Image (cartoon, rainbow, N blue to C red):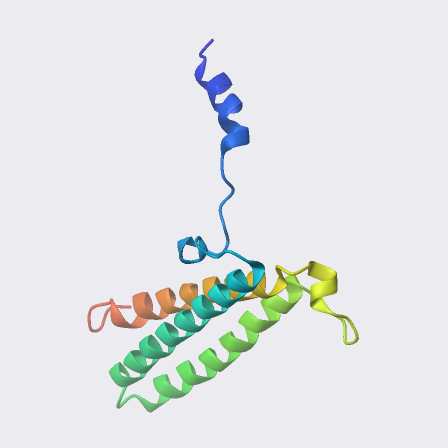
Amino acid sequence: MSRLPLLLLALLPFAAPASPLGKACDDARSQLDINECAAREAGEADTELNAVYRQVMQKLQGQPVAIEKLRGAQRLWVQLRDADIDARYPVGKDENPRVLYGSMYPALYSADKAELTRQRTHWLRATFLDRAEGEL
């Protein structure tokens, strides 16, 4: 029998869990620092999304139906992203999310928002900008 599975099992407790916040927040010293870093990452992801969206809209210039459809899809996607995050961290009308989820709530919310936004940016870029003209 190979010893590799036993070695891997022995090393498992030392494996660091993947951070939902990414490397940019590794230097954060306090929960406030982490929350601010995560919010900054979400803002940067949103800025990149908006830039790619503008590039796509520019590329679609002269195609009013395509522009209308993408604009509608983007509005719906923003609603879906926010609803997905709200579903992951449900908070009732009179509830405090920090009581329900702790002080990490703002960081986790922002990290999820950044990740979903990066995914959308990737999709827009791959679908509309990285394809050759006329390619479906």
